Image 1: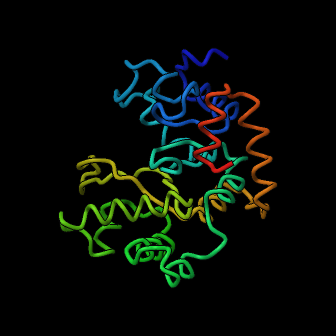
Image 2 (image 1 turned 60 degrees about the vertical axis):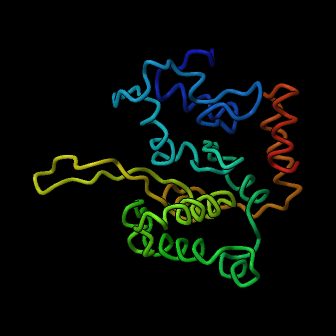
Length: 225
């Protein structure tokens, strides 16, 4: 497939399966990203071929996990590599254990607890539940969400539309979140218990078979391989 010109959602799914990890925007040198391989004129049109809309279709249909997993940037991870990536960048300790050990902030722990109890909760409701609606709390809110995504404790599972009593779209579409475990169960994906060596081997075999030497070097650094 010519990755220089991806015009449909199905073609984008094929690219994710081929490359394993596809950033939304340029992140890894000499490695494709969704914004580079799709025509710029398709973006933010709200049409079916709008890649900005695709980003939440991937996790909804189970093609890929979506979140800010690498370098604090949004990436799409092919479903069959999710367990391996989680093993490498995640933690073998629970959120509660990491909080008690001082490895996780109080705000991140609170957000995780709310998301775990309310799978698919959207951003506005999450901020309200956490008591972080005030503008001066937004930085802590965003930082805590990033903290949880960077270890794949949570994923972006889609968007929810706020509508008025007449069913008309009201305001912006809000990002929704789930724990990784809930998302995997929702799409019927079994969570594999891998050792770090097994996870490293799986990622290396998959990624490095399609990567340039420069991209391999960048992935090694980003994933600690």
